[in-house]
Image (tube, rainbow, N blue to C red; front, top):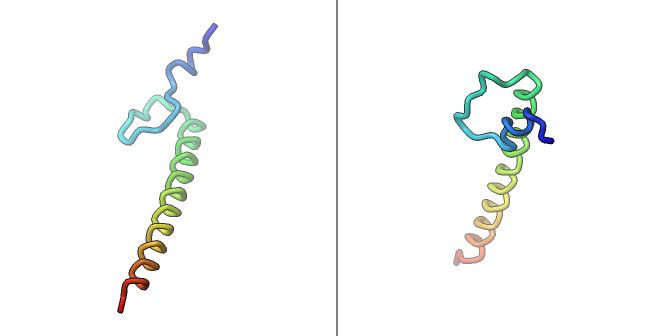
Length: 61
């Protein structure tokens, strides 16, 4: 009914989670997942910095 690998394998990466039982393929998938998350976070930082800069320039006299 259920695949044992899917039951044991978490869907998301957690910082500090055990990686010693993961295959090279799984580790590469985690790296890709983390890289895309880093890119998403960097975009959010850029958007916030832009908003902050625009607000600062608006309120300067």
